[in-house]
Image (cartoon, rainbow, N blue to C red):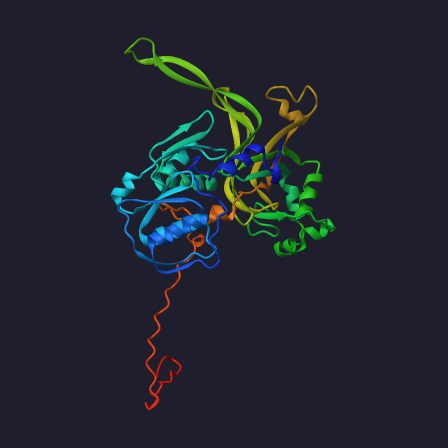
Length: 473
């Protein structure tokens, strides 16, 4: 069932309860100090007492508590901010001992140990890895009593309320779904002769046409084939013609589509596609017939070799909607037989890293393959005779060059769901975990006014110095 803002009921429940304190140990919420509440050189006991009366809570002072003068501005401050501000200014801390009851204690190591309290909380992770999260909490927050539950992908922590609150903020910031990418991949095999006719010299650096890699758009352009042969690289890029070349190659009868998958994967996780078949390749090893003997007994096993198109892609998204693709493409085929009738394999492989915009198409080429074919023409029956058959026929030799062109188009379908609270730093204190900007600022004490001198009607008025710009008199 979908709850508000597109979240499920479980997500809404976890968001609502993430920062709640233990039952009965929380302060009243929604309490604001008056808009005129300020103190100047007031006793700290009186300041705490005034806050407790305004918030309708009970307050207890430790037996070692000592009054100190404090000047503080608490106008429109919340109850928690007011107590935290006065505690920081007087070097004390407070603890909630019962519902609507707090105790104020001097901030010393001995008192910290005396009033130390611990709570237990379980965090259910939705996306983050258990081990990585445990290592992070141990390194950053020094959390030691932490245990995982792999069945529910949860972490249970026993620590002080302040460390538990800090762990909650850290887990909220890192427990995010990874970005996801769909990669359109198309692998086509074209005749190198057609590439030269169209002026598309992708695999020949320095030649007229496009060298290395090009970008494809979805626009339509009309131009004659004779004009294509005379275009330079700058003309092609300015005229947005790569898509036209691509359509011409696709429409050619000699062009073969080797693979056209759509690979969906998450950020940093590799996607693998295998198209073809597996061919067994025998492997012979020698082992001794008896223990301690000479290795002379042959043992044959078979390793299976992937034949066809093998694609491995690992995407990495960037914050500017770029996608880096770690790419490995291998096109293998059985090229013939070798020693002992064993198969020989032809292999064409690309390993590279490219960076593309979301929706940008990149074209890679250069997997060239040469094929030589020998055909025998002659009189039927006579040309097949041994020794003299070549007198009644002739042999024709033809060479064909093919190139494999790969197009890649990444589409970002999920981005990292970050909020301002995830990016904002917070203070890990022993009492307060609120960001510094959320605490009310301490006012700057005004300098005391000079005492007024008694007026003497017969006295000559004293000269008042005039201050010139720059602070000089």
